[in-house]
Image 1 (cartoon, rainbow, N blue to C red):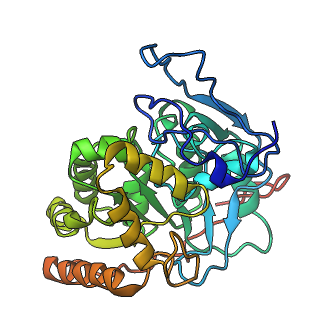
Image 2: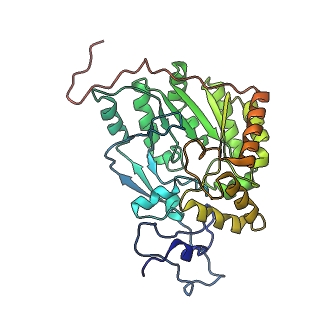
Image 3: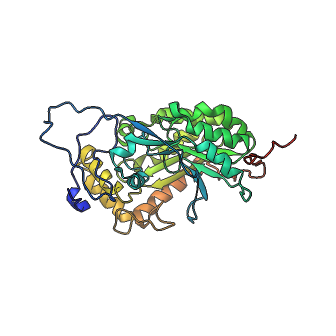
Length: 364
């Protein structure tokens, strides 16, 4: 079947699957064919089979991704996984699954790929003759501590390499699983090599289950902030994303709880809806907040020059217009009142590159 335009498939959805964020699994925008559920096979009373998570093993060709975006604080990052089992419906990384011929919908959170050779590649890239250390950001696309990390441990292996060579890094996550690696993170923090940010989207566990069904609960994330702070690891809270008329009223409460738990730094990002994420989020609103759907989307458009998304550097994270300015002022006022600090740069001068292939180990 020839693939129809996106507007023709909008609104078609599979029955909601427990523990998943997206409601639909529309074909990739690059595919010539479209997949549709056969509504004659299952009636409304039929049991919906569980959607299992499949993890593929990927042999990546490189592991450090570089960028020249002027509105972010890092120029290189690592993504141990493709796709993310947390299932955050608003995730701006969802469209990347289309490049794999998969859906940014349910495929993104159930058909995952682990870069099993990440640590090996990292050692090779760090040992390149012209390499100069700068902070590597991990968790800026998909979460390095998503549930499959418990078994696959790609992030653990990457972290072991970075710790061994004294390379600076930042970690952003929604998972309390980060505490598993305190044995590596605490010594690195003592050398000024690491910062950790916990994303706390809401304090309401019911809303969290709807928005990010397989991420750690809000309380567990706050407990993780406390444990990291007690280990003297510089810890931030990310109030992200701020969603108009859904969680925007919680900004001050999230910052206050995180500060009380020991977070030293804070940041926020306004909801981003690139490409397929806009339709997925609209479906989600219709399912969970039908009476608020039009209000939410109207407010989003007011922050994006009348569109659901604006990719302009400098505006994509915080938006523009009166509503976006109000969110920024509230965040700044609460941060100042609670005493959040500016984040200091990490050290790059302690880096010791790993030996290149075939090179003898250096004498001590």
